[in-house]
Amino acid sequence: MRVLVLSSLSSDSGCFLRAQYLAHSLRRAGATVIFPMPPHSLPFMFDFIVSFIQNVMICFTTSYDIGIAIKPYPNTLIPLLLKRIISKSKVITDIDDIDFGYRTGLLATILKIMQKPLPKKCDSITYHNDALKKFIHTTFHVPADKLYKLEQGVDTTLFKPLHGRRWEKRKKTLINKYCLNGKKIIVYAGHLNIASDLDAILKAVHMAYQKDPQIHLLIAGGGPMYHDFIALTKKLQLSDIVSFTGYLSPALINECINCADIAVAYYKSIHVNRYRVSMKVREYMGAGAVVVCNSFGDLKRFKKYAVQSKNSIHDFSKSIIRALRNRIKLKKTAEKAYHFITAHYDWNVIGRNFYQQIKKI
Image 1 (spheres, rainbow, N blue to C red):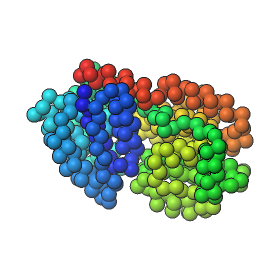
Image 2: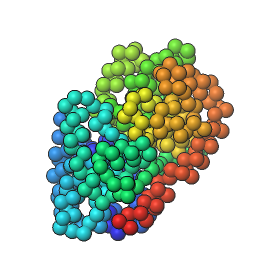
Image 3: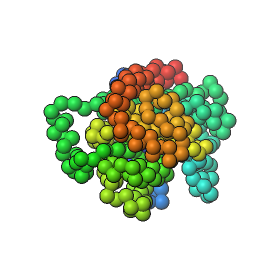
Image 4: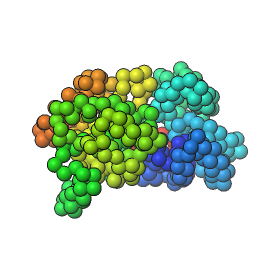
């Protein structure tokens, strides 16, 4: 079976990473996968126009049985649905959050209008969160029998614990590069956009620094708000204890996680975050890290495997301090988390099961 996987967002987005992991897992499961590279993010969302043109050309010059759009945007779904008219191809869209919920005013309305009419025209819709399933059913008017739960997974070939002499040498290089010698290293890895909630993490680190001046936050990743968060770091007078790497490949992100004493994630207590699923927490645990997070939404399911705080920034900062003080003992919890993730969230298993599912469509 030939499968075309399209990312609705740019090549420097979390959407692209989910598309990439899915494409690789389907290929390993035996599918012939076509996975074109979308454009990099461009000013004024111009990458949507570029990718629409690119996707029209790909859809009408490529033979495939199943077309999958990650996120229900017109730049991917319109070309796939048009191609279906003249072929026997099937169309699947993956809805992985309510991204228009992070915006307000005209932009939120535009994003909602762009996405709402298309999913119900697809042959199948995937989701990764039970709360999101209900939202898709009621808001997008998709019949329940078209819905399939496609978990957020971890590529265990990329995110894994690192050991050995070669790694120890590499680790010293990274620690020197980011001026982390003698520091208690906190890592945050992810796409720096409006949904990252990194502003809350910076405030929590600011509070934690008052109790422990040895901490240092390494922010691994780039994104459209990269420069905004650098400016916020300066405003909070945290530039001496926060380092930004900029965009990194997943393999380099894994190295940063393996350098750290703890890895952090935080969801603000807002309605839209109830529909999210944390890729970064799964990747942290897949890399063997000690994880600190709050207990909102999807994060609750990791209660047994993380140092979990209440949802205030103050409580989150106290959990950071507690985890750093007990990081050696917490390695046992991290080992349990690693085995939990590899058993339940390995993209190889998820992709294999999904491949069997789409054969039935």
